[in-house]
Length: 234
Image (cartoon, rainbow, N blue to C red; front, side, top):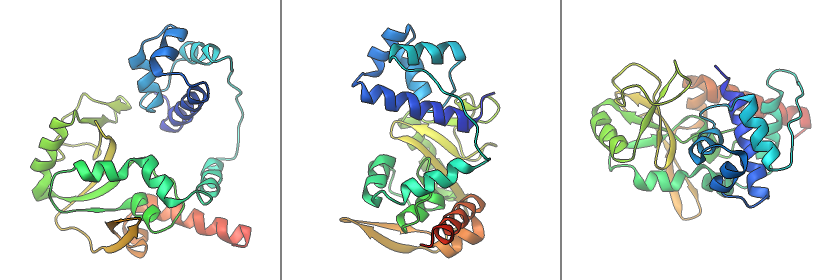
């Protein structure tokens, strides 16, 4: 199976080149001789294309792939540096966070993980909105997922679909929906939060100090961010 990182890199490259040429997914698909649905899956990062499909997509845009190597995880440092230069409001909009929060059902929820770190000013990568939900609200959440064409991440197939939606069923708490991907941390009681504001909106988020104690992924990204600051003299 292709790595998630490779699928994401290819998705970003294809989407960026398509936007530069002002092509729709349908137009690119027709030019490359594949289906629009295949282009959508590739651009969502759900599946890396085969070499032949990748070559067809790139050739349709008059570009080619250049392969190189770099130290392991060097991409994270470069991405953190890039994110540090971008306004938080822009990143919130790119993530589709406000639209997702507006559409979620009316039950208690808080923002956690890298999403909470972003809202507190840390330029860490966020692949999808991350929320904490109570187990007692899982049935409401499942009904919302069903209404919004939810598909759960299938680790065996490295794609969404083919497994039960319900959070109670074994598997990662990660879903694709009409409003994009969403990741959840299920808990008996919601963690303590602080309120942060951006524009006219306020968000309930898990504080950075708590994230560093309870979320290994967010803690590692925050550590890398601080290391970058020390290295750059910031």
